[in-house]
Length: 150
Image (tube, rainbow, N blue to C red; front, side, top):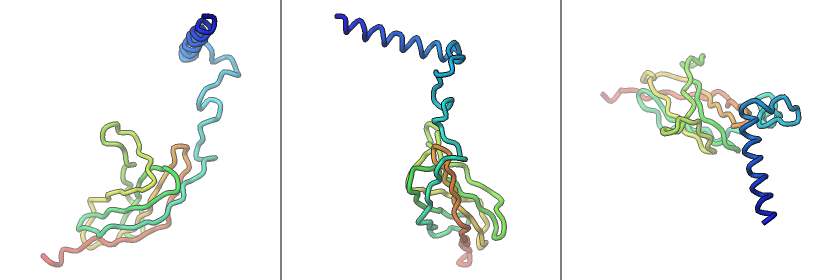
């Protein structure tokens, strides 16, 4: 019975402690820091970047292409691109269709659309770990398909 009361007491205080902290009552106590307040959340300045490899492009269409790559750790997926010689656009970071939260896969695929047929483009892929480590690939090149058969 004593053990049961002790567990109930500790669980109750734990809940109270969280509530008191979330209301700001305990933030002035220096040794009670949680999450990113104690430095446990890494930023891009000290986070290890992912290693990007195996970059490839599916057969380009008239107005776009799909670029694929892998990373050694989970990371986000984004492509920056533009006409050869400049980067003028970025895709949105790939998110879950339902929750709209950023996805962090090992294998990446990004669709780039809205391009002009028969045009040379440059691009690079960008991946960011949940901790903020950022990697950008070397510049890659692709040419959209032409409508010569029409």
